[in-house]
Amino acid sequence: MLNAVINELVKGELPKLPKKKPLEILTLETDRKQILRKRCEPVKSTKDFRPYIDEMKVIIPAYKGVGLAAPQVGICKRFFVVRTGKDRYEVFINPLLVKASDESKTYTEGCLSIPEMKYFVKRPRRIVIKCLTEQLKPVKMKFHDEWAAIILHEMEHLDGILICDY
Image 1: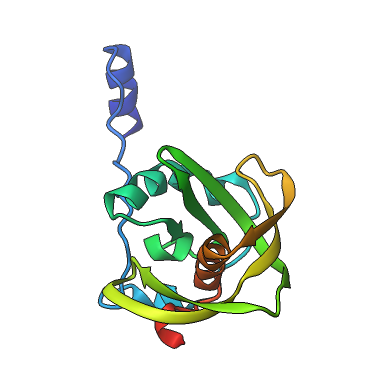
Image 2: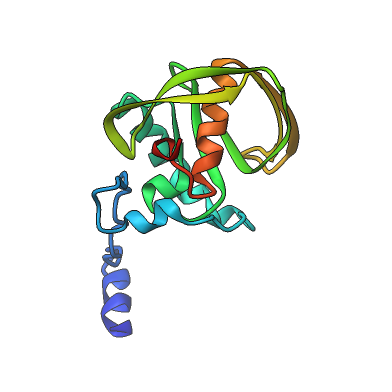
């Protein structure tokens, strides 16, 4: 095997490496659906999330989504990506809810892991979270109304909670 790789390099050819399997959205109907119900492990290094971020950013608009959590693509780590504009995304790593308002509102929510279904979910109107950015910088962020609902929805995926549980 090693000789074959060396021969290819000598010829100026790159060795053929196995292709990375593309990410797929897990639904409650897929074989690997149990990942959707697990509490995810904290991200400990960039290798836990960096290889997946770009592909998740492509999946979100392709499926007309707003956010995508790691377990939804089969990765049991605590991170998610949210689309904040046409070509703008934010990555949330190891998020922690710090504060939630007593005032709540009921939102109609959908989920890429439960296609074609909508659920009514009562959520706090304002939240404060702590997390790491994609650059691993610690931040504290405030969200209100729909953005608070989106962030909480994605955070719940990291704990194995789905909107059909409400």
